[in-house]
Amino acid sequence: MIVALLALAATPIASTPALGTAAAQCRPHETGPAIVVIVEGLKDRAGNLRAEVYPAVEGEFLADDNVLVAQGKTFRRAVITVPASGPARLCLRVPGEGAYALSVVHARSGGHGFSLLHDGIGFAGNPRLGHSKPSAEAARVVAHAGITPTTVVMNYRSGLFSFAPLKR
Image (tube, rainbow, N blue to C red; front, side, top):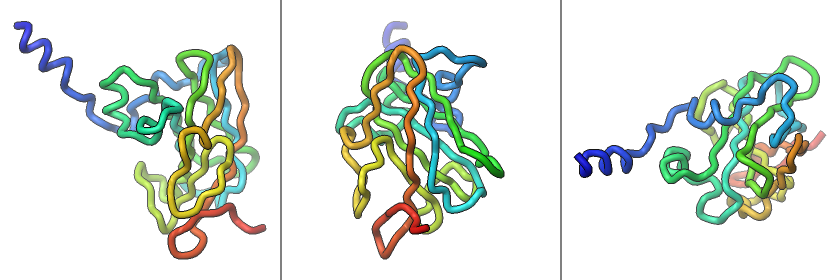
């Protein structure tokens, strides 16, 4: 029986688009701790926006979500349809005050994946992107006891393998 329980505990949670969304869901009149992400620089008003919160630790930032959840580490996800007009905002509840790493994906087709050719990506702190992902430190946001606002500027493919904000 103990062996069966240990095997069950070691079984990773299946990764699905809904993983992390229940824990991230903000309540009406949210008091925090939560991060409100204001998304700027959208290429268009198609698809959806997906914000994800990770531990602000190298090796855990952008790690497989089901592995993080199975290990009891922080992972939160909020998904919204891109609003037809006005500001795009996502709210993510976090476990407590502290540093987290944050990414935002503009999935223009509305899917769950990421297309290098079509989709946009952004990070807290708005680090300059080149040919690789930013460090956890560069994508860091510090959540306070209440609502912590942060602005993320989206980046889209610019050149063969790099990403940058749109030129307007």
